Length: 157
Image 1 (cartoon, rainbow, N blue to C red):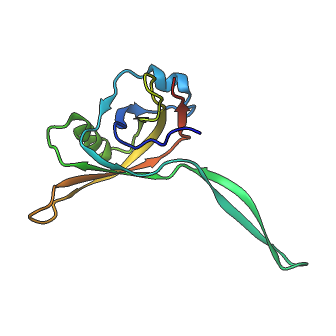
Image 2 (image 1 turned 180 degrees about the horizontal axis):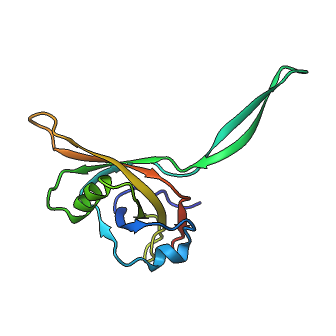
Image 3 (image 1 turned 180 degrees about the vertical axis):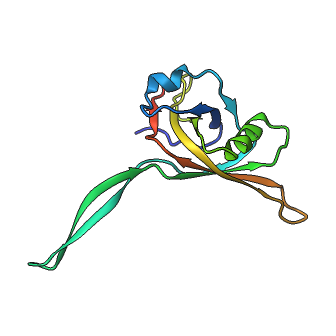
């Protein structure tokens, strides 16, 4: 049985706008222009989930179910606001376009001395919001990444 791991040390990077529809591991690995999005406090979830397709059979009054299209979800990313962070600046710029961008999520899930898993995906930056809050609040910048591809895993080595 393996050890459990925390999210500490995981990082999220934004890459260039992409028009690819194939989304292969080789394509993602060939990207060199990754910019880390800094000061992330929380990264939401991503991963495929099939929609439920249903139909009712008259003869036995039973609902039949099948798997439909798959959706990798929308990742909610919460950062501490930093107007000088190049990754946050890139994500803000991406939110002002209708383009898909490449993303790389590095995980802190490897055994000691090894490299952790990497998750690659394509997403639209649907929005960015500044949460100013109250006197004793750290200002936060919130991004919503609408994943528009499969999430491709490059396993730890």
